[in-house]
Image (cartoon, rainbow, N blue to C red; front, side, top):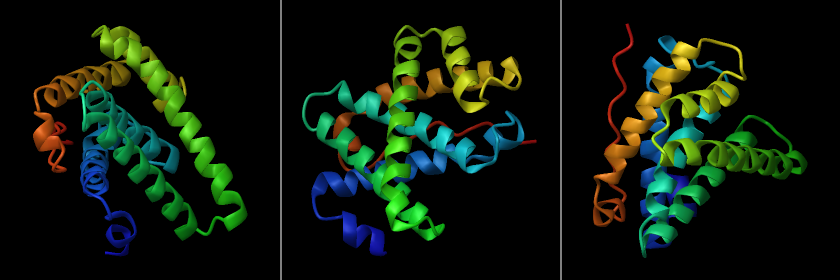
Length: 180
């Protein structure tokens, strides 16, 4: 896989790519789009990937080394993937940098919005932030509350995982409920 050859030069980079891939897989669960009505658009998928990547980075940054290095490797993997995806979609070379920067800023803003409620285990506060970002303020508060509950559960799941396992690229996200 060309992506691994480009990215897989250092141990943390390989682990970061594996962790990022697991976050993407978790974020693509049909339940989010079918049951919670997350918009099945580029923006909706970016928001879900961003949520799972944020949860993972947040977990890793709470560790001493290699946690911060792994967190950076996950971040780098995400934005290398975003760059490559934009290019595959035909975005011009001149525009890719601007679009990736906008995505970085969006992830940063969402991370700031989610960090406080997640840290305080504030489901309603997290639901409000998710409703604003994932559904752009349009949609069911019930769906946002369900996603907030799942995010809080994922956070606990990640907290229970040892950094030595994470440093090998192994992460276990809770499976999403089955879509009807």
